[in-house]
Every structure is written in structure tokens, then in C-alpha cells.
Amino acid sequence: MTGQHRSLAVFKLASCDGCQLSLLDCEDELLTLAGEIDIAYFLEAGPARLEDTYDLAIVEGSITTQADAERIRDIRARSRHLVAIGACAVGGGIQALRNFADVDEFVSLVYATPEYISTLDRSTPASAHVHVDFELQGCPPDKRQLLEVISAFLNDRRPAISAHSVCVECKRAGNVCVMVAHGTPCLGPVTHAGCGALCPGYHRGCYGCFGPAEAPNPESLARHLDLAEPDLGRLRRTFYAGTSGD
Amino acid sequence: MTERIFVADPLTRVEGEGAVHVRVRDGRVEDVRLRIFEPPRFFEAFLRGRKYTEVPDITARICGICPVAYQFSSIAAMEDACGVEVPAPVRALRRLLYCGEWIESHALHVFMLHAPDFLQDRRGRVVRGLAEQAVLFDQRLVAGMRIPCRLMMRCGVPWPRRQRHRLAGNGSDVSPGLQRPVVRLSACRIGQRGERFRHGCGGHLAVGREGPVARLNQLQG
Image 1: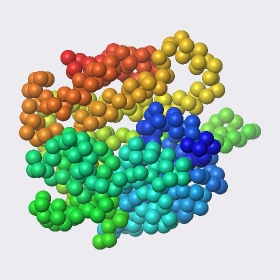
Image 2: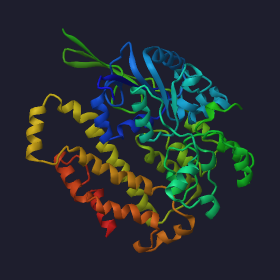
Image 3: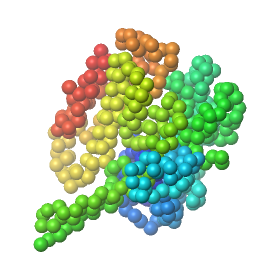
Image 4: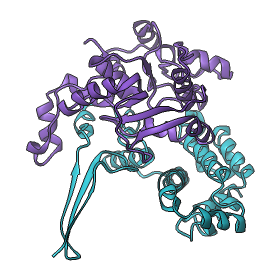
């Protein structure tokens, strides 16, 4: 850290608050972090100082309303660096499943008085609206990776976040491959690392909550798992559906 | 005649986005408005057509603070729909996991979100209190509560299918994946910390002698 207190703002759009919670979950490191930076805006934790400029803005959640589309532009204008965290801000989130459906039907199905509901027909990531300096994947992101990203931007360097797959983490942890040894379907080969291979570590197949790894080959994996539509389609459309081209 | 307006916009330290507006006239509350501008996400709609095995992982994303509650709600709904009754040990395991979330959420709420506000003008009194009851409000205590909670959360991840049937048997038959967190729980001496925790918080948290922590210890045998 530079010693000079830089300001941090944490914003939430359409999401579950889980990504912001990853920051509070930093526990001991949070004390160090709070000593090094000025947490100016973080509604979940309390601070609500809306300022003209923040050194680093962290955004959780996807853009699903006209108000949020304007808000993300406002956040961008106030921030030296803008980092999107979590499946919603990076890939539209689980709520991007509306992108493949009739949102008016969704509204009338869920709400007794649909006229009170204002929403866009698509859920989109922050990068669809403004320039984003870095995207940290995960649903929710890993707190160690989050600390690395914050630390990197406050020190004007690039975050050291590997883009490899969960398989690498499994091998590092010495896990027996659930797919090879038990025949359990696992999305680890195509999923971004960061979770520490949590599910395979407990003999469960990865279900892809960290989103796609760099250069994934889902077609090959589907052949290996003998997956066909509609199962394959559902697997590809869960947490990061807002980024898919189809 | 005096009129006072109280506005909290936006509300902080809660999951979701909202604001509250209260008008008081002559000491009497005349108008209260709660505005929720949390965007809708439509879980009820897009869950249609999903495979039942995918549902708990999806409903867990309704709330990042209490995902276990939503996982269990969806599981209970599906079991109800299918007429499934789970064995008692599985129910106990679920209860354990839920208590883990409960303890974690309370610790977060008290230590991270609200206590700093309530105590910020009473620093002197807090410091004196800390001197008298040395371990209270110690950050390590919070960490001590959260580490076992994390382990319990991990407990909820399904264990190998081939070992599931053993759960119906006695305690020594549980899978290695289940044993490990319980053993480590014991190492954390959660019972002692739970006692101090309860004492320090005026008994608001049910983690004392009769609470879930005590039951945890019983489970450990």
C-alpha cells in the first residue's frame, strides 16, 4: 500500500449481496484493509458517502433496470478504476435467464401487481454498458482473489488472477478426479479457477459457478459426458447466461 | 404543532435496497413509507423446466447472506411434492448446517454491521467492559465462530453416493468427508467460546448451554 488513504466504493445492482459479503468475510484481512483504505461507500456495511471521485469502485450485480443502466454510467464517471465482481456483474447472473424468455410473462407470473414492476427485458453485465478495468468471476468470488484485486488496483498494478480451470486446483489439492474415478459429471475442465476446487474436494462434480475458464472446450466435455440437449443447454445457461451469444 | 420527518435513504446494513420515510406530528407517527427498489430477479419463473437436482444451487443465489435457508426451502418443497420423507440423521445434519448459517449470520450482524454503530459513542465504556471481561468482542472470537461455521457449510456439500447409505447407521459410520469437520469443530472448542459469546451479548444468541452449539458438542460425543 502507498500509505496514502485511497477511497473504495462498493455498489450493488441486481444481485444477492453475496459478493459484497465476500469482502466482509475477509475478517482479519478486513481490519488491515480498513486501515489502509478509506471505505467511502459500502451500504451493506454502513458507509454511504456519495463522492465525486473514488479511487476504486467495486460493482456487484447485473443491469436489469433503466435506473441501474444510468447508475453504472454514473459509477464509471466517479471512479478511477472500476472492477466488476461476481457472476451477475461479469456475466449477467442467474437472472439473465430472462434473456431467453418473455420478461412480461415472467413479471405477470411472479408479481400480483405487475404494473408496479419496472424492469428491462435483458439482464446484462457491467461491461455491456461501460468500460470495466477488471472482471473477477465467481458466485460468489473467492475472498483471497478479491483481496488480490483490491490490493493490485490500489497499488496500480495488474491483479495476478490465473485464468486456468478448476482441474488445475484439483490437481494442486491432490484430489482424486471425480469424473475419472467415480464417473461423476463435472464442469471443472471448462470452469474458471478460484474456488479452490471446493465441490470436487468433497466428491461432488463442479457445477460451474465460477463461469468459463480461459479458452474452454465445452463441446469436447459434452461428448465425454455424453450430454445432449436439453441437459447441455441448461448447463451452459445458469450463472453466466448474460454473456452467451445465443 | 410540530412535524418531524425521518428519512433513511438508502437503508444500510441490510440485504437488498430500500428506503424508509417516517412523518411524526406532535409525537405521533402519521405516515410510514417503505420503498423497495431492489430489482426483481424472477426466480419463480426461470426455475420452471430446470432439473430438480439443479434447484437448490439456484435458490441459494436468492440471498448471499442466508443461502442455506433458500436451499432448504427448495429441498423441502421438492420433497413435499414427491412425498419423500428423509431419515432422522439427515434431518439432524440439515439442522446442523442451518444452525451454522444462523450463528454466522448473527456474528456478522452483531460484530460487523450493528455493534460498531451502537458502540461508537461509548468507546470508554466499551474499553472498560473489555478490561473486565477480557475476551469479549475480541476479533479472534468472531473468527473462532466463523471458522466452524464455514466448516459446517462445507459439510452440506454432498458426499460420495456410495457412502450415503451409511449415514443411517451409528456415528462411527459417517463418511470421512463428514467426520473431518466435526473433529475440527471439537478442536476449535466452540462450546467454551459459545458460552462467552452468549454471556457477552446478554443471552440474545442461542449458542449457550442449551443452544445449537451444545447440541453440536453432543453430536461429537
